[in-house]
Image 1 (cartoon, rainbow, N blue to C red):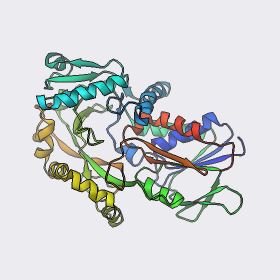
Image 2 (image 1 turned 135 degrees about the vertical axis):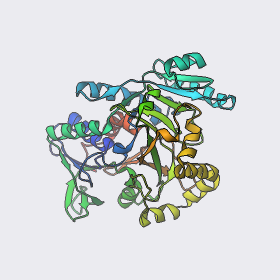
Image 3 (image 1 turned 180 degrees about the horizontal axis):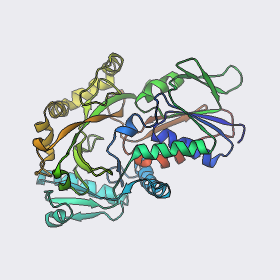
Length: 405
């Protein structure tokens, strides 16, 4: 494999994990990661809550369920091997009223089918033994759900790539990928006009995955509709009111898990994220941004309007919470009533790359497409960070590096 070359577009945790896996499994392969920012993990990887999911939510038999289960174990071992933070502080998924119990029961069946380790159903008294300041009728306790620092993990993956002889090129924005006129090699063309030649290209472009994928293969669907997830920080003594994580029972109509309480490996406590339509795919500040190109792309997509017609009430509720901290906390206080508006500050946001089909449906599973020398990760929302090492193995398993194209 020494005469083979692979270009990986995207220096988030998935792209770096893929690059590392290639260097491990295909020694001698020339591996180059091209990242448009001046650092790795600058987008989704660097703006999430740091949760290592145990697999409670994902449809049994789906790619998400399979790769989350494998990925958690791989990530746990990787963090141990490299002295990276990994804290199994545990999670409670709490039902607070009788109306939620049917969804709660269904979630328990899903988690059981996914063999979530050491999962237990607990009642109100045991719930408060685990989280003394939480309230609810029942909860699922997942003690193996953990937290980590995904930026630190991504940085270590990048070092692994370079130690193995690969390159991580920062400040290198990819404009397109095209077929070479000579044979079947691929040309990765940067915004500055530089051309990198490769036998195989892996696109891990996250929030730009639909645009870059369309430039490569002409496929226009699914499209990325970005959702901004805003966080609140609990800066004072009340951060100690939550020991691990407290989550609501999710609405199965959406791939979002609802506003929740999460410890950070640095000792902090955050609340969030919500899910508000983003008009800028890369806006992470306290105030939402507006980028004309991104807004126009969303509004021009028929799938967005079909989704909006179906879920507009939920959208209005999310916007109300975005505008008002009190409204934001209204649902969160059902689970931990002791933390109110006076106890929090806005902390910024992440942006989720959510693939939406033309019919308005939100793609729930990972979507990884391969053909003609190009592997395109078209949909990799949460739990992609948890699953990153398993996604990398899945991608490399299917790459035919031994044959051109």
